[in-house]
Structure formats: C-alpha cells, structure tokens
Image (cartoon, rainbow, N blue to C red):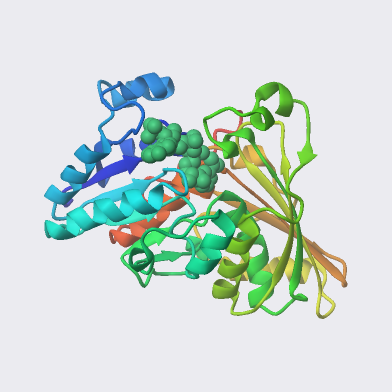
Length: 353
Ligand SMILES: NC(=O)c1ccc[n+]([C@@H]2O[C@H](COP(=O)([O-])OP(=O)(O)OC[C@H]3O[C@@H](n4cnc5c(N)ncnc54)[C@H](OP(=O)(O)O)[C@@H]3O)[C@@H](O)[C@H]2O)c1
C-alpha cells in the first residue's frame, strides 16, 4: 500500500471538525498531520473532544500559521476545512497561495458556504459581503457526490446538510422530467446543525421537546439548492423551503413534494429512484418511510417515495454532521485522491444514539 496522505483539518473545535477528526483518525489511507484551532492553539484536542481521547492521545491544536507552513512543505496533502462561512474564503486562499509559492499541491474540500457558489454576485447577495478570493473560487466545484462522478476542478466545496438531503430527494425527479418545476420542502434538523456556540434559539431548553419552523421560504440555503439542482438535473426548478428545528442532536429529515407531470404510482416512482441511485454506495432507497436512527452517525442516506398519480413525495434522512458535512467531504476527498469513495466511510449507523 502506498504512503498515507498527510491531512490537515481546519475549524478545530467545531462540531464538523470533530467528525472530520474521527473519520480521519480511522481512515486507512490518510495520516492526520495537524488540526488547526483559531481559539485554542497549543491546547489538547481531547479537551474539546473527550469522546475522541483514546484515538487522538496527546494531539494538540496547531495555529493556522503552523498548518499553512506544514501544507506548503508537503508535495501532496489533503485539507479538510470546517471553518465558518465568511472566514473560510480568506483562510483557504492564504493557505493555497502559500502552498503554490512553495510548489506544493494540496487538495481541499471545504465544508463552509464560501466556495459553493459559481455566481459570486449571488454569494455576495446571500451572505452580505463580497467574496475575498474570486479567482480561487473558480478552482472549486460544488456538488452532492451522488450527482457528479468527478470534479472538473482540483478542489471541491461540500453542499452542506439541508442541501444534500433536499437534493438527494429532488434531483432525480427533476432530471427524469417526472415533475412540475416546483418543489415544496419541509426539512427538520437536529441541534448540532447550528454549531458549537450556544445562542438563544439553539439552547437546549428551547429546542428540547419542541418542534418549530424558522425562516420559512427565506432560508439562505435555497440559493445554493437551486443552483446545485440546475447543475445536477439540467433543468430550472424552484424550491419552497421550510426548515424546522427538531428536538434531537443529529440528523435531518426532509419531506420533498411536487406535482407529477404524468400519472405515476408508488411502484413506478420507487423503480425510477432506485435506478437513479443504482451504484451509489451511500444511498439506499427503501420500501417504507426512512428513520433517522438508521442513518445517524453514518455516511448513509436513506430515501423513500410515495406517488398517487398526481403528487409525489420523497422522504430523505441523513446525518447532518456526517453525510451532510464531514462524511460527504471525505467521500469527495477519497475521489480527489484516487481512492475508492467509500474508504473509511462504511461503518453503519449505531442505531441507538
Ligand atoms: N453543523 C452542521 O451540521 C454543518 C453541516 C454542513 C456544513 N456545516 C458548515 O461547516 C462549518 C463548521 O460548522 P460547525 O457546525 O462545526 O460550526 P462550529 O461548531 O461553530 O465550529 C466552527 C469552528 O470554526 C472555528 N472558527 C470560528 N471562528 C473562526 C475564525 N475567525 N477563524 C478560524 N476559525 C474559526 C472555531 O474553532 P477554532 O476556534 O477551534 O478554530 C469554531 O469552533 C460551517 O461553515 C458550517 O456552515 C455545518
């Protein structure tokens, strides 16, 4: 077996960085070289992630400068970035500029929104600031791995959790021309979707034993979902998207509905969806409605479909931190490095979380 690829993680103490760390430490072809923290350089990683103490031992956080130097010193390396949007564009541009100057050629998968947009005016409109590195943005492709076999660019941007669930459910219907070009989506996310820093709306007493919608029809991810659906399906579709806060820590459940263009029953819809995802190792199309517990903490997504001749509904479940972030990113990284896309990602869900 060839040497392991030195791998660095950005976004150090965040929830997604923790999942990247867990996956990277168990990956047979990657060597964790460093994990950077903006707020805790020099501190033990196990303090932020006690559940990973047995695997990360005495590992300590590095500064971003250390990571930049490390990447520049390696002819080939991997960068998994889980910093906030609005931070990542500058962080990665600086790191890649230093690497290029040193003749190094790292591959990057970014999990923030910063490199998801082909249209940077749209990025500025949605995120409220101009993109700091427009030339760099052209080196990134954003797609759900199941909707694009190979990246045409050296780096990839992960589409994110709500987008992955919504796109896995809706793109086949649009690509196969089965539906009118308007999807109605109700998607429920767990509290880890909001990141590590507690705020009033994400605080446990607020979310626990409760279920509520927020940002109905105005969620910022609609812009990304619409652009990615266009690229993946080749057709212009609209999304009426209503996110909900669910009383659980991890997972997304999306219910996606549309009007059928021609009559279709459930059996035919199921066959179409199964055919579309044939050969996709992380997507399973079920006969019965999918359940969060069957995918949480894994890189698997499960779908199910029902059609009554007039309306079609696709239900999708996945883990927001794995398939919707760290695992989906690792799937892309495997491809960028020429590994089988499933490497290090095939552990099933624990079931009882
Ligand atoms: N949570 C999800 O389900 C999910 C799903 C898909 C995509 N994402 C995206 O993944 C990224 C990470 O999400 P998360 O949930 O892990 O967020 P998080 O828990 O809030 O962690 C983000 C981490 O980024 C680091 N950071 C903060 N400000 C920084 C700065 N100015 N410069 C450098 N690093 C900074 C912090 O760690 P240090 O101080 O240790 O560096 C922080 O803990 C975000 O872009 C998010 O939108 C999240």
